Image (cartoon, rainbow, N blue to C red):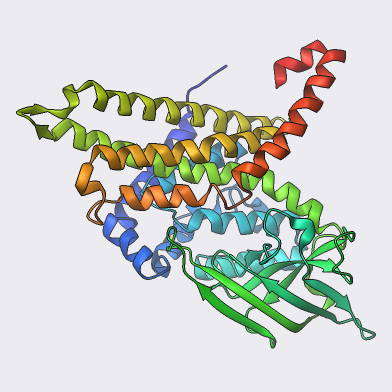
Length: 394
């Protein structure tokens, strides 16, 4: 086992850190949270300087890298001190590369290079169907002329307020729970019948939510993304990588909170001496570092397994279950160490804590992660009874 970065990975990490110093100052990030979106110039620079092209197909102008390197890139980007939108933007581009036709992906790539962000955002959840994907009732029905009519409501759509289009997950023809046939369709935001309702949330305001109302929205059959009827399976494939990406984002933010807390503790004086000499303060610091180390190890191992063709459904779910609450706690401890100052908007630790807290819900709740990984772990151990060597890969 080699726990070191390659020279190329170190070059990329240093380059992104320099990018952040130039484009992602605390003032720029704080303004993004205030204005419900990052300055488009920053997103464009991320792509123009090549960082936003990592992980995308070379034949379209991308720079292929493995999942492990991609994970490090996303962690380093969010280490700038916020839920920087360019990381979730890449998730959309990954989906377009995975499921889109050459024409669909070429359009998305051209748009991405021109604007710095993709032409779509993902619309999955509904008011009555969050973790319960099978409960969604948005439908796509085909008329006699071959047109697709989409009806339903999507909510908690990240970037839905500002995106020019949506990847809408729909039930095919029938909204019944028993119907497992789902498809994904590309829907322009300016389509007749689309109404966008902005939503407020307590964290991650830099990537605002929206509710999307779809009332007899008509698209061509060519708007289908991926395979008809296989949208749910595509979702599941998306979620494994999405959970790894989300935890990379959170890890970057929690690492920033840790550094702020340590800088404060090293300088703060109380009762005539530095608070760094107090054992209860040291306990916070030690517990925070344990979490950061554990999450990073689990995160990188999950990405490594993806790169080696090893299933990560259990790993990604456990990573989310453990990492999201624990990284929230890292930020909460950072706030505690900074005392009254940490509870003001003069520091970023409270913002980082709320961002991490939100990811205990987004991308699948931490409770659902127990359901997913619990079943999977038992199946894996059952395999290990027949093949003892199999246990060593768990």
